Amino acid sequence: MKQGTIIKVVGPLVVASGMSDAKMYEVVKVSDLKLLGEIIELKGDTASIQVYEDTAGIGPGEPVFQTGNVLSIELGPGLLETMYDGIQRPLKVIEEKSGSIFITRGIEVPGLDRERKWDFRPTVKVGESVIGGDIIGTVQETTLIEHKVMVPADISGKIKAINAGSKTVTEIVAIVDTPEGEKEVMMMQRWPIRVPRPIIGKRIPSEPLLTGGRSIDTFFPLVKGAAACIPGPFGSGKTVTQQGVAKYCDAQVIVYVGCGERGNEMTEVLQDFPKLKDPNTGEPLMKRTVMIANTSNMPVAAREASVYVGITIGEYYRDMGYHVAMMADSTSRWAEAMREISGRLEEMPGEEGYPAYLGSRTAQFYERAGSVDCLGSSERTGSLTVIGAVSPAGGDLSEPVSQNTLRVTKAFWGLDSKLSYKRHFPAINWLTSYSLYIDNLIDWWKENVAEDFPEQRSDAMNLLQEEAKLEEIVRLVGLEALSDREKLIMFVSKMIREDFLYQNAFDPEDAYMTSKQSYNILKSIMLVWYRGIEKIEGNAEFDYQSLKKLDIYEAISRCKSIKVDELEKFTELHLKIEQAISHL
Ligand code: ADP
Image 1 (cartoon, rainbow, N blue to C red):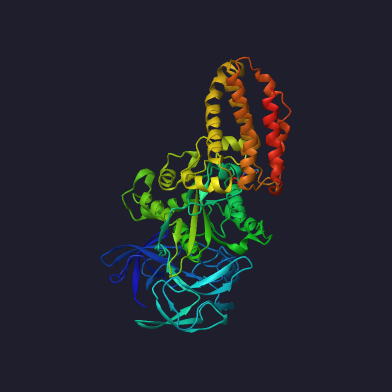
Image 2 (cartoon, rainbow, N blue to C red):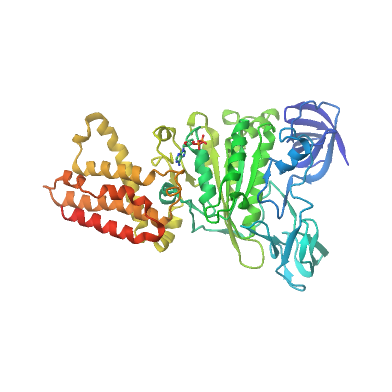
């Protein structure tokens, strides 16, 4: 093995000489402890190395071993249900080896279990032609997910042999005759984490990623393949929201990357997540989840790697034709890692000390989200949705990480601590949040929910915006100064907030709503607006108070509990509202 010599150690950065034939991004093993590192700068024969493990006690004169490889991860059956650290070491195996997940230096453990056997069921026959990305067989990875074994991207040819049965991830399952000779295919592939996995092309997303949240699915929706940003000041409900999305969203596979700042933050997630149940099957959510957790004792550099490990795993399941949702919490920690390393490299700092390439790195990362035509000869689509949390200090979104994230994501759920103090949950501020996916979804809504859904949705949003303006006037001169039209706006908006937007994540009946339920609840409220404003504008003598005295509001506030298979109850309620107002 080629080796260089350490000349300097500054925190997670190690500088070594004698590295003239090393390559950028090559993986190296630092010192006799074999700490994992990656070359991030080369000048002559001197390499700057970002080290993913604690460098305490390492000093000049010690060796650096080159590996010739770039930082890659292992992809294959066994990813689901596993909790990894930032460099794809299974936490459980580390714990067994070292007695604690907190003492991890130099431990080499493979990402995928080498002993475990999987029942490989071929889907191709000898003689068939295959190209990179084609599925050659399946494995029941968990009770919830069937793993599709794909031909690696760089192999194409004719199947010469295919081996069904019980196999480990490194046993040969197929031999492909290629123009360059015979190639052996095993279930495990490797992929460099900084390189997006190849696809045929991106599609224009046209299907929602439904989360069951009324506020999100109606006002700030995601598509399958979206890139979204969720800033989460402490206590605003970031974790509850993310876990709710992970649990209820209609993606098949979930990748959760946690870069906690304080140790206990991550420990909580590690303890809580495995307890979550998949609502459709009652099985543990982990059966369709891969978790990557940076325990806080790991150096910042590992946080930098962890988001790429997560997104590469996400792409891998997308390539099988699944809808994947990845949550990264929080990407601010990732950006801080970049800042720290850049500082140590003595690069020219940009805004607030972040490197000048923060914007391009952020963009490249979110670019990997999307709805795609998967690689391979048969038509197959998949999607990868990325929801990145940011945690701006003091909730100030003008800082560089938030700004750069907002530039490249198309949906924004602004969690607001003012709302969470008032116990309005989810604390998604309806005035600052947005989704740029509305146009993608209009057709879907009209076809699958109701023809007038898009219109009702934007009318309701307008009312909330008008309410915010009127609140100012009410504060100054009181409610009585408002016209009847304005009073009705205030009245209906209050219902939208309290009976529609407010959703209790801890009430199993309320936590998840189908789009049809959400539409019908909102319709009950909006009928009061539509019919009420007709009365007010059609008759100068109309007594506004008589509208408020109707006995329909109790039923409106309770209609959340109407089940998805009792939609006719909504029709009855809507008729009752129409009739009550028309008789005034
Ligand atoms: P953060 O992760 O932003 O610090 P959490 O997600 O832990 O905040 O939320 C803080 C608290 O707010 C929770 O413990 C819970 O009591 C409450 N909360 C947040 N979201 C909801 C919700 N959708 N429904 C009910 N309570 C909520």
